[in-house]
Image (cartoon, rainbow, N blue to C red; front, side, top):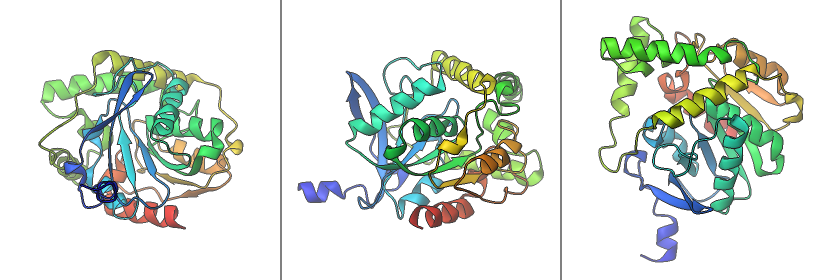
Length: 289
């Protein structure tokens, strides 16, 4: 295959078929997948607590990749990436910037979901010239109400999921209405579409480090978000239990160049997965404006 053919090889792929690649950072492998056209500013996706590459909703990734080069990756110590997961959001942001640099990218857009949204805020504040636009979903500012309670909520839901033999994401990401339960089942089925070369599950050590980092973020003194002048698109469900929905409204008030998608009805932390068609349309319009 020629270099020209190879550079466009990921354009026709679906996320479920995207090859898993690796880039070394100081000898530590960071794994990633990318699909979509080569043209334009790449979109880097930053994931939620405990998530690996296979936890991105393929409808969201494929929808965005119809128009954008989309790159998903496992940060340090997560999934198949090497090293030890740091216990602060700031160190996770530093690792994400090193990953972006290792790919040779000098300007990117960010999509941060939940914990990934915390990381995106730190990157935008510390490396403003690296970032063009940011999308923040199901997330909140440092010191936001309820964020320091994520550990207790998560562990109680994991216990419930073990006892009921159900996936904890059903309880943490979706509402308990008939509609929410139906959407949860559909989402969990979509996550099974990739059948080969699946990522490793997160280790207990990395999961514990992420919980500690989220707790610290929730306990921090609020940041001055007015320094983040990038265009920002904000999304969440109206009933987010993980990062309570008022945090998204707080971000909208405090980020000077923000746009808020009306909160998704009868939706929780996984609102962008539940309303994937609507979210993708909003995100592409925002990124292309």
